[in-house]
Amino acid sequence: AKHEGRGAIRLFTSAMDQQLRDRRALEHDLRLAVERGEFYLEYQPQHHRDGTLMAYEALVRWRHPLRGVIPPGEFIPIAEQSGAIAQIDDWVLMEACREAASWDQPLRVAVNVSAAQFRRENLDAQVRRALRESGLPAARLELEITEGVLIEEVPRARRTMQSLKSLGILIALDDFGTGYSSLSYLEAFPLDRIKVDRSFVAALGQSERSLAIVRAVIGLAHGLGVPVLAEGIETEAQMSLLVQEGCDEMQGYLLGRPRRLEAAAEKVRRAAS
Ligand code: C2E
Ligand code: CA
Ligand code: CA
Ligand code: CA
Image (cartoon, rainbow, N blue to C red; front, side, top):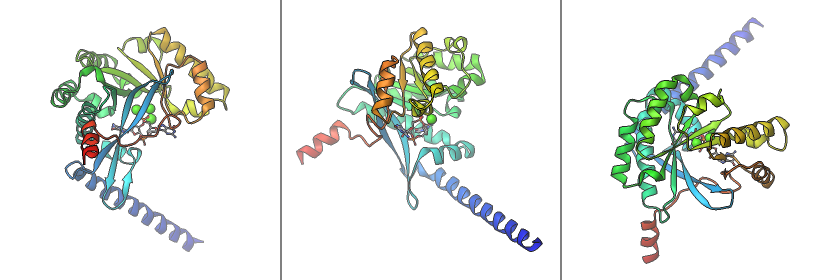
């Protein structure tokens, strides 16, 4: 038994070694990925409840030369810990603004902001530069910020948001309901939109609690005069329940999966050739 135990420990530690080596390798590759042009953006549509297409959310993808496409849930946490996130954030903001500026319809683009990016001193300068260099009108850019980053340091977060708002861009609160928000605290921020986290949408129709939460979020947002967008909608049942509850906007696989969007110029070029 003693023997087996040691064997098990050895197996265990070698599995940990392997994991650590994998991670180191990914960290290394991540540092080079921006320069090598391995990132690209997919866009997922956001619709008004009446069916009108309003906006696209930009979602980053990493095309790893050996491992194939890696989703953000796998590399963003590593990038955040290794410090590579700043470079990725800069690239995403610039690329999303550039691509959106070339769409044939003047739709809004929603860009996710990492906690690290929100905490940086120069976020507003960066946004200003992205708008200037891309030519995208400020009103067509929305930043999605998660609840977590707001709670950390309320006065500072409010200043950051106010300076962003003064540029004319919009701000959405992402993943709402997963943190610790209260009405009084939400009132402190100049929000243009609240996104209900998809975990609540997924549970709609199965749990009374999730319906109660969705209903409360909609009531709260409307009390503040802010529209609510529900994300992660996969079924007609979820959709009609949300419409019935007064949800304003919708996003999810039912309406459209994230995908590459070609620029208007690209379409014209292709049609001509
Ligand atoms: P998120 O901001 O909450 O984005 C929504 C995620 O839900 C996306 O996953 C999207 O593909 C997925 N999704 C959309 N509709 C459905 C649906 O109907 N069903 C299901 N099951 N999933 C749906 P994705 O692209 O893997 O992104 C995961 C997270 O990674 C995002 O969550 C966001 O927090 C982060 N992320 C993505 N792109 C960026 C980026 O450019 N910068 C930063 N900082 N974070 C990003
Ligand atoms: Ca988001
Ligand atoms: Ca979200
Ligand atoms: Ca999320």
